[in-house]
Length: 147
Image 1 (spheres, helix red, strand yellow):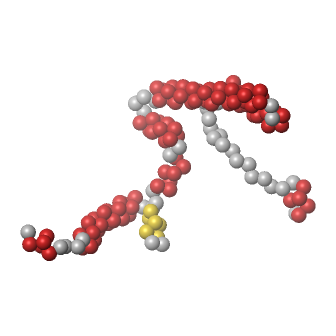
Image 2 (cartoon, helix red, strand yellow):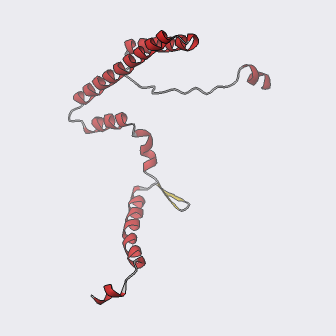
Image 3 (cartoon, helix red, strand yellow):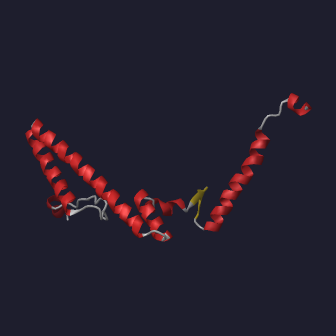
């Protein structure tokens, strides 16, 4: 195993945004060209290549933004009147799906509450007990007691 790890170590690879239907073959070609130009500019440290890289980078970013805008515009136009599909599109656009499962649990002390009914009861207790606790802590001056 030591020999295998020495000659073929396991490497972690980060995969970003596996589902991006707005990335067209033209944009992917531009991204490849941007990457190639950056490698050349880094090796040669030529100012003209760095200028070309920045120009291509800006063109790629503009193309991605425009394509993504067009994709979501047509997605929402196709799903007019479909509440579930519309909310799925909004959550995907705002990247809310990942954090949604975490938002439905609450830690109180050492216990974790995931039941929606228990969550609502815990929030209700928190807010109804806060007022009387704060009222007990307020210092009452003698002049306020006279009036």
